[in-house]
Amino acid sequence: MIVLILGLLMFLGVHSLRIFADEWRAARIRQWGEKGWMAAAGAVSLVGFILIIWGYGMARMAPIVVWYPPAWLTHVTALLSLLAFIIMAAAFVPGNHIKSAVKHPMVISVKAWSFGHLLANGMLADILLFGAFLVWSVLCFRSLRQRDQAQVAAIPAANIKGTFITLGAGLAGYLVFAFFLHEWLIGVPVK
Image 1 (spheres, rainbow, N blue to C red):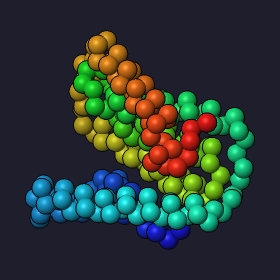
Image 2: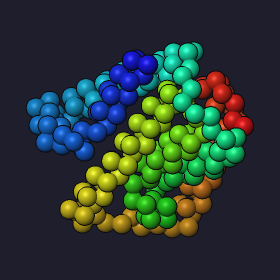
Image 3: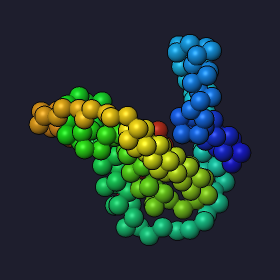
Image 4: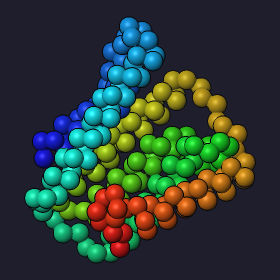
């Protein structure tokens, strides 16, 4: 469990600097340059991500049950995961109505994914992993909204073509991941 916690601290810590230590982050960027900062932050993120995967895998070998979720919650998780894939696609497809409406689709996507998985999994490692990402996404979204209010951000123009491409890409990504990649990568089939 220590490896999982260390990975979460590293990965989410780097991704939380704009929330909790924006001045420190800005000083590092001035000191090291944009590319130097990106290299350092990327390296810490990558090591953290690897530790999360490794630590979660180790924790699943000796699971500690906190609660047994009802079976119907897997359907809620599937629905929230589909929503997460569509919203994630909105972060990358230009000119879609979803991004115009939610403004920060990647963070909202993480929120939907982590909340859904937190509902359907009752092991301690699951609660740590998905709970940490849920707390991070809530705090990050709050921080982003405060920054939006401080600066007048232009709402990106949206069109129906971009929205349909977003919906199609999100649905395709969800189907591929749910029916082919989830069991292979995670070791658990989607039910």
